[in-house]
Image 1 (spheres, rainbow, N blue to C red):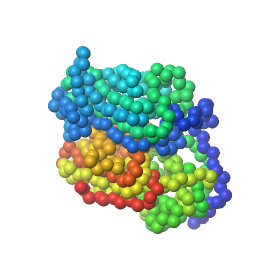
Image 2 (tube, rainbow, N blue to C red):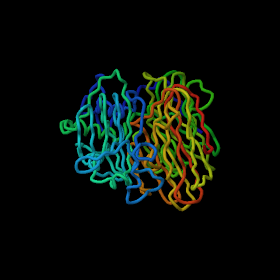
Image 3 (cartoon, rainbow, N blue to C red):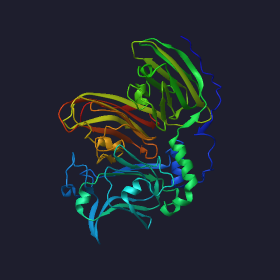
Image 4 (cartoon, rainbow, N blue to C red):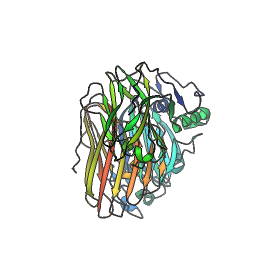
Length: 499
């Protein structure tokens, strides 16, 4: 085996967004605006955003339930719930979300957008056809901000407000509202920040800037990486592929093998500072958001192309870092690893991942799986899920249940497994987006990723990431999940049994 040690004087690497330098000098003042939040997302820096809430159509999340008015009842009644409903001239208006204080809508989704969106922001009212708004018809550049993926309409664009925001839908009849599925994610903004309220009429004047931001977020940043390991791993063998001393941030890792099959046999571990146990220990394919087949993917923090996986999550450390890879297969793996290290910058937050397996779940039982529980301060940034289904029917009727500092109710209660990942209607269509995707999909297997790049999930004292796991038919299935977060503490705890 040949090992090439890393040179500790490795120069800070240069990051490029797509090809060449950005065309614009984006604002660097303290004003929080849609532009600032999109640049933060491109830099994987969500620090300006605070606590998160999800408003959804799931029964139990609102006081007005119109599911019974629907022409058809879907699944477990994750439709037709609103904060309030009132008659208005020519029809009915339902309130989806109300937010007071400074904040931003960071994600909007619907499986079947109907009617007219009413957006009241800091005393101004915007009306727009709901479907067209989610499709970004008002944006000079729509992708990746707005996209319909496998039946789900998604808008990833920060709609910023200073003091108040209300989201409502106007339709002609309550019957239209009864079947509506929706999710509206919101993040608070620190009150001392200066806020620039979102204005729809300003968008045409920002055409070139939006195009540049769209290119930045559609094409992951590129780094100059240096080879740090080149060798063969025998079956069952562990290797410290990267050992660093001092303080800095790993900006990029490129892990290459001779084939996707070889990549699929690798297990990844990361130890920060002087910790006794790894902060991340999981199959490499889970960290890449793919199945063990290692499908090509081009998400913002992770790229897989052929037999090369590139990880771009910032990985800070202050007293050394060690990365280990194990060959879990039964044949040798020829492994190459390159890295980009920024020695000038670090952070008190460490990157963590909790990997868990949940075997032989009965699809017709109300399983609630705990995927990660954390005491301390941090921010959830992603979830990767794989399912092996033996029921022959739809497996993903369960909802996301994410608890952030409060135990009276989840901060996020979604409307279905596929809805959390940005698609809809039990779709088995593969799709890839910078923030979410379904890389493998069939009757029996599914693999998907969801990265909270623009809509992070911060917590100050504790958090719990749960998922309901059940389907529409009887049978059994296995869940494998990886939840990702940054935190200052290394204490994590997870339970795999149903609650």
